[in-house]
Image (cartoon, rainbow, N blue to C red; front, side):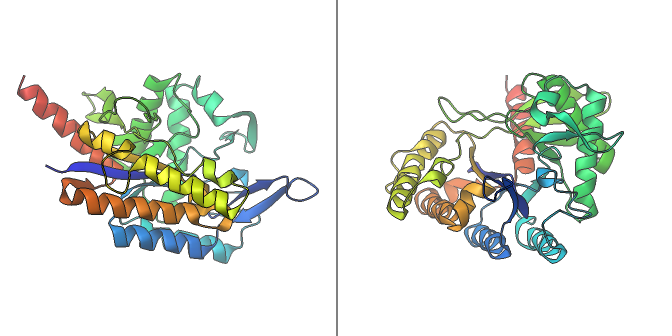
Length: 321
């Protein structure tokens, strides 16, 4: 059986806030449709699958099913259309909470003076369930169905039992799906792991699985390169650390040899690379090496498929004990 491989992309959005650019310190930055299209087409051509975040309320600029401040409606509609056409067929679409910033006040409107990661570490199951259900409904309103949740930063890590239950209950409330999953843990060093069950209600038939990445984002640091030469060197080094040209070393080789799923991590802004799209080019280089070196020994899949496979694997192992 081939080893699963998946790509997790966080922070997907048509627009975000750029700080320290104008005198007032804030402006809205659009991610060009050409970039969204290039990412989708590359993944389709290379067979890349996994999870792609679409933020329901990016940077508190507004709900994507209504209006996003500073983002023309035509641009917003095109982003959603491209995600549906080129990305969603091969990627699970998940919210990354609601804003990836300050917590929305569901009862009164506006925002609380607390960030989502701090809030998640002490919120109750019902409160989080309502929050995640709204995030899923916003995505559903624009035709993007979700089956899980992505944590902004390390949100929920100190309250994971309740967090996992809330993900499962929100997924059931909105879509009547009995299996839900979320991404929180990054295992970029040491022994990699398969996804694991973090919450289950046997009486209701609901299960939540945590799908970790077994790598960190190799393209995050290179964004800060001060010259084209430094950027190229940083990205070349990042690719080599992931998988050398001969396939004999790198984090991907370590994961493969450990017979664990190869779950890669990147971010929308890392791939965009401040408009240079060099992170996307480096990602394609990694995908090409994976295809050339491992061939049919690996199989790209969505994270929801990996979560389901992990449960079947655990059940099979249990029967043989």
